[in-house]
Length: 516
Image (cartoon, one colour):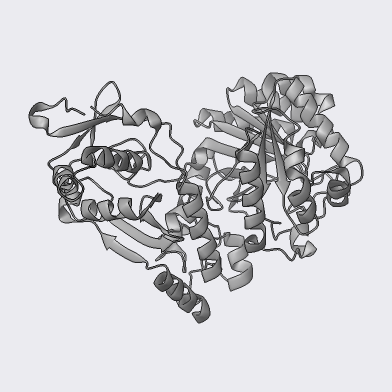
């Protein structure tokens, strides 16, 4: 190990900036009733306090030396300089929890986390208190002379770096704000050629086209979005491909150099295959069971075979495909039994899976009254993902993020604008405000309903990792969208999920020999 700076004052690392980190997500809403600070049930408050006590929760600031420490500096060739003789530049407010024999450290404001073992934890405590790297190396040399103290320190620093815990290194963020102007979701119609039992939009063949805006108005909206710097557009419904003129709109979005995603049940893919191959970047197909019997009971007779045919057809055409599946009471046993077999029929990289943690309690999903909550579904989904992720099979979309309201422009079939794809509570209409004004409105909505303004979230140490509970469900369970319905049990599940997720953040092997 050597230093490239005078006086052996710095360690130098080449940190891979593409390491997976969870984004901070805010979860705003569009109902402006002020929250009641006393609106959270006392049992929830006491339960969370007991959870904090049991997990040895400690909320603390770092030392003044860490606060004053200069951020790591970057060179043109991607290397970072970290001083050996100064305190480590850590985030200002940290939280610590002991869970399952490990230590979960959280950068509260940044929404970052790292999982440390007992030895790493002991070293990190010293770094948090302002011990310099050189001082720590001397301590290690005296206590365990048989060990290479610097090797131990480099391994820990590498993990802290890729987890975003060192100010100045790519991946660290002081504050993340949503950009609703980047992504627009267009619900072209509420009509659908299926009647799924859990549909949050109440879509079906029995819905009429009444109130749908014209192809020309959709086209102008796409132009306005692209002109304002928009990047991605999603076409959905209902079933987007039922809308007469959907092909013109998809082509328009492609011609405006927007990233195009299509959500579909797959029934009309053959008819539009040439268009999709030429103009669509990704197609998501909904399938709600690993076999025909299970899926068709939820989505309708024959839908499984036709959806699977659509997936195979799209893969053969070279289109990126994602399969979306909702885990619920009626498919739980089949998913546990057959999901791995179902997922393994496609080669690695050919298809991505997105598994939902239960039914959205909205539309027919609310009427369905599915008895399974997120606490029931989460361990099943996590086990299924673990079974597939570890064997070189299809890629899985996995996230601990919140609901993400007001992080996109959502336009319903009638032109009303919503902060959420559940289409609950319009904030305006596309004919009343320009795209720049819509973006400003959604940014304000985001601020008003983020975790810092939600009772039950605003004092929680994992709020910027969790994003908060669904604001619509908040309103239905607590009477106010800005009062969280999160219980101590919910939070414990989230904490264990964070431990599982961030335990996977290891020092890249290449990092060990890139220290100089």
